[in-house]
Structure formats: C-alpha cells, structure tokens
Amino acid sequence: MTMEAYRYEDGSITFPGHPVGPGGTEPVGTVDLSEYTAEVITWTTSTATPPGVREPNHLAIVEFDVDGESVRAIGGLTTGDVEVGDEVRPVYVAELRDPEAGIKTPESQEWDGYRFEPV
Amino acid sequence: MEPVAVIGASMTQFGQRDAWIRELLADAGIACLADAGVESADVEHLYVSNMASGEFQGQTGVMNALAHDLDLMPAYAERVDQTSSSGGAGIYAAWRSVASGASEMSLLVGAEKMTHKTTAEATDVIASITHPVEYKHGLTLPSFAGLTARHYLDRFDAPRESLARVAVKNHANGVDNPNAQFRKEVDLETVLESPIVADPLRLYDFCPITDGSAALLFCPESVAREYADEYVVIAGVDGATDTHVVHERPDPTVMGGVVESGQAAYEMSGYGPEDVDVAELHDMFTILEFLQMEGLGFAERGEAWQLVEEGYTERDGELPVNTSGGLKSKGHPLGASGVAQAVEIYEQLLGEAGPRQVEADVGLACNVGGFGNCVITTIMEVGA
Image (cartoon, rainbow over all chains, first blue to last red; front, side, top):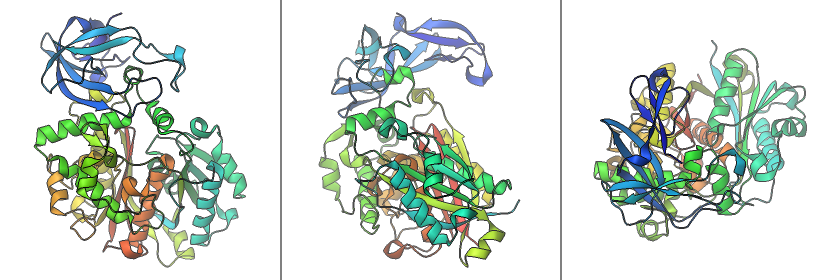
C-alpha cells in the first residue's frame, strides 16, 4: 500500500490522482506521499460520525512538500492532540472504517489508508 | 430572449412531517398552481428537485409520480439532482426551459423526506457525495465545516462569537416564518455552550435534518401578464462547480463555485453586489454565510465576520441576509432548500413576507451543493 499521488506534465501533484490534471495536463508519474512528512493546515474533531466510523474522529488537512512542490491531503489523525503547523507523518491503517456499515458498496472502493501521526 | 417570470410560489411546513416524498411534492405543487391561478393542463414542463429519495425512502422516479398526481400528462418531466443545490439547479433548468422557448409554463417542485432516518444514517447519505479518499476516513459535510471554520478564524483573526451571531440572527428571523422548522430565538451563550459537533463548531452552528417542499412557476414575461398584475423576473442565474475533492482547492476559505456563479449572475442581470437589497445564503453551517458574503462581493475577503458583528446583515441592517431564517432555522430538506430560498425572495420582492418584510427591489439566492462543489446563484427583480 502506498499513498499514491499523481504528478502531471506541468509539474503539479495532486492527491488523489485524476485522469486529467490541473490545466488539462496528463499524469506522467506517481509519488508515494507516505515517504514524506507534512504540515497540519487545519484540523477538527468530529463527534457526529456516520455508521462504521470511530467516534470521536480526528481529521486534518495537511500539506506535503515534495521537492518544492506543495500537495495537500486529507485524512484521520492518530490523536486529537495536534495544533496547526505541527509536523505529521502518514501511518498505515488496514481498515479506516467498517466497509459493511455505511451506504457505499464495500467492493466499490478501498478501505485501508494512512492516518497522520505527530512527529 | 424574452425575460422569464415567476408567477407563483409555495412552501410547505418544514420540519418533522408524517408525509412521505410523493405527498410533500404534491402539496407544494398544488399550492403553487393555485397561487398563480394556473391549471394543470397548462403546465408544459415539470422539474423536480430532489437529491436522494431513492436512498432515503426507496422511492425513485419521483418526477413521473408527481406528473401523474397533479394530472400534468403529457408534460415533459425531469428530476434534477445536484445534491444540496438541487433546488437552485431546478431554477436554472426551469429558467432554461422557458428562455429557450421549449416551454411556456414550467413548474418546479423541490422536496426531500429525511427525518425518518437517524442523524447518523442521514449524515452518511449526504456524505456519500464525497470522494472515496474522503469517505473512507469518515469525512462528513459537518467535518468539512469544522476544518474550514478553524482555518478562517485563525487566518482572519475572527472571534468564535462571530459565527455564533449568524445562528442567533437566523434563529431570530425564523421566529416570524410560519413554515420554519425552528421558531425559537437562541442567545449567544446557548450557541457557544451547545455540544461540539465538529470542533470548533457546535450544534447550533449546523442546520437541522428536515422534511419539506417548495415550488415555483415559470413562464415568459408576456404570458405572466395574462395571469398576474405582480410577478418577479429572473434577472440573472448561473451555476458553477469547484473541485470534488475539497482539500485540493488552493484556498480553503474560497468557494470557487460561489465566486464564478455570482459573477456570471451579476453580469447577466446588470446588477452588482451593491444593488442587492436582500439575500438568502446557504447557511447549512454558520461559516458558509461568511464564505458566500465574501464570494459574492458583499464583503471583502476575511471581513464578513465584521459585518455580521456590526449588524449589517440583520433584518433592519444594510443587507438583510436570510430573512426566512435560513437553512439554520427554517430547515434544510435538501432538494427543497434552493427552491425555498427563491420563494422567500419572491415574497420579499412582492411585499408578501409579512413580519419579515424588508424594502427590496432586487434579491439574490445562493444555493450551495456539497461543500461548495456545485453552486447556483439566482438574482430576481420585481417585474415591470
């Protein structure tokens, strides 16, 4: 499992990837964001969570610097004890929420991924 | 192109209703036709704004159900789903049908039936609009609001109380709306001490889960004069999108769809933000009222909170915002909300808003889908 972002012809990077990138450019490669650390841009703790989701659910938007190119990601936090500007690293989680409990068809998407842990 | 008029409007009681989706739709549709004095046989197009009757109730094909229940056959019928902006998208669709000459009488009815589900179930239906990388982390629309509110407050050094003032204002307005879900004032302390839902936002920063419906009737202005002495004209309307993945936006405090749809609606109408006398903004969360005020040019970037604190958006302020009570107090039946926003503007422009009445010749409604994913802005004026 990797935290796969797409790199496009113009040098920009997005997570997740898209078939067509910013400015209509095509993907030319991938970057594994799990090998980088990131900075917390903003965070929240959600207490009204849907079926199959942990409660409370600590969430953040973080920003990676990949060789001078910024790319943002969103995901859970391993703790609610964070502040804006903190450095975090991705840690693998085999099942982020119960695939059987929500409205989406379990087979329609992946359920593992990365949460962010303060460095 | 001949101007498109609105000659009838209706809204049913918002809140927890015994009625299911078909009854909600029919009630609003019948009331709207009666308001305009138009017979079912005269309706050429029917648009039904509805986000998720299949997911909520297991009832699909609602446009055909309504066409039959109102005896509109053989009228063309179409369901419009644009998540929370389905109502606004319905306005855009109905306007297009008349402006293009395809229809001389288009009925729009928006409705949603939600309250039979638990809060967690309803939240999950709505969260199903998210990208898989968001959904698997349990991202919900309220959690996006929490993330955005923290960023806004930090970046613009805005006090937490300024968001609470949006809730206080809109609840006060809702007291005078007989169809609002909540007709009860709340004070600042109650908002600030209510349970946390998505830190730093609390229970009173969020709209409720709601059943309800609303309707509008569209026709060319020349036809409007056959039915009504007073009517409203759609001066400008446009829709726009922003990224599906919310964190990919360059600035979390800017909703590109609000900016783009607003600019296009202003351009079409010939009006600017300074000309708008009353506005209905999509306050699904209190922070959204700030973002729309700034995106639509009512406030400078990072300064909407100051206007709210100064009373600028109160009913007796310079620009009354959400005189209906907004989604916050009136309620948010997804597919009906954008239609009900326009119903409020219609009533304000025609002097039919009762105790909520303000002085207004030009009104604006901004209907936001997802977390700014799709937005429709509509500008309305009194017909000549």
